[in-house]
Length: 178
Image (cartoon, rainbow, N blue to C red; front, side, top):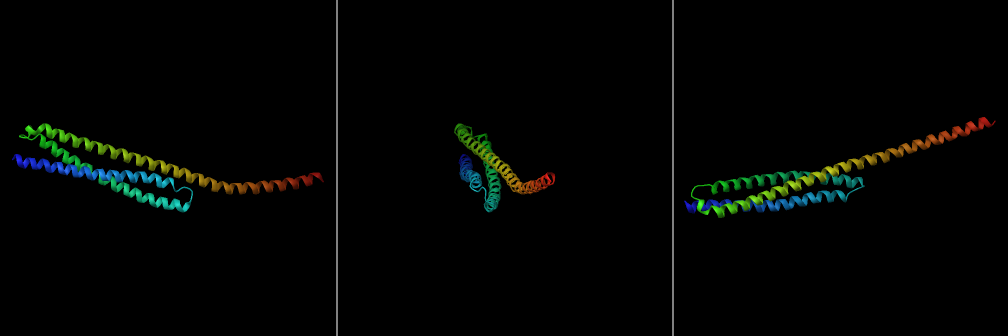
């Protein structure tokens, strides 16, 4: 039984390490995606064609963000399950002779899980804040452009009105001087 239970523990540790490695790679990619989102928006201001390209690019990035978020959450859930199995194993009767070493290993895996969970939530929150900020700035930019293009029409109307007013004033002065 000791040999079989030792293999079970080692299998759990291998699963935990494999999931931790996968999570590490996914979190690095996730962080790069989130960083590239803001830099892709910063480089494309002013030109309407590049605004369209930016919107298409960011909708793709939004889909990738959602996909990667789901994948990372699933990996975190799997790692939590493996850690729970490891915790159950440490409380199994007959394992108490190895309990100190097992508890140390379990605590290390729990700490890694906690760090990855924290990093994921922090990166996700930063991304959502950047996206919200960019959306707000984008709407303000559109409002400014709309105002500028609309005020050009208003300036033209004002010019015509002032010109007409000047003609009327001149005609009026001609009649009053006669």
